[in-house]
Structure formats: C-alpha cells, structure tokens
Length: 94
Image (cartoon, rainbow, N blue to C red; front, side):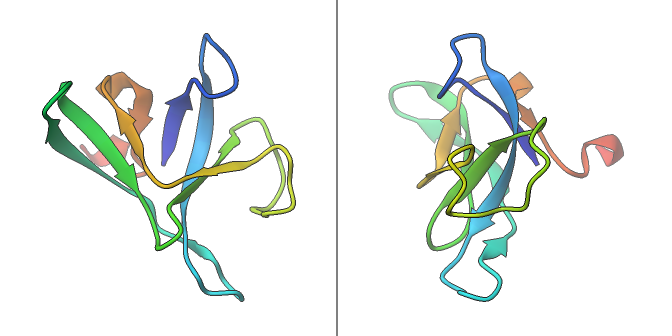
C-alpha cells in the first residue's frame, strides 16, 4: 500500500506504508484501508496497521523497514480525506 503523505513536504510525497506489530522478530504486518465516516470531515480513508500503528517511508527510499532509520516515521493511524492519496496493493484488480 502507498499513501501520499504531507508530513514532511507541503506538496506531499508518495510513501510505502506497513503495519507495525509487537513481534520483535518480524514487526512488519499488513496495513489496511477502510472508508469511514468522520463527524467533522464526512467520509475519510482510515489507514491502520498493527498494535503499534503504521510506519511510512518514501517510495524512493531503498532500505528495509527499521525503527533506527531517520528517513522513516510512524503514526498510530492515518485519516486521509482524498481517496486519490491512497493506492492499494490490489488496485489493479479493482
């Protein structure tokens, strides 16, 4: 899954997103997206992952997922109002 993040750049950047679990050997787990109703924003795309939320890194970054990387960051979840800011892994099948 990819999302367009506006965390570091005002114009946004496409990022890989993965779920993050409490498994010390294999912390990566699936990230999921679900359309939900937000009382303040109407419909929004909720992106969520493991027990520790989701982790993001720019698609241009060629490194493994790591808590030690300063190029990666985590969020408990993401709420993205624009569906164009989400690319699902199975999008070609949709």
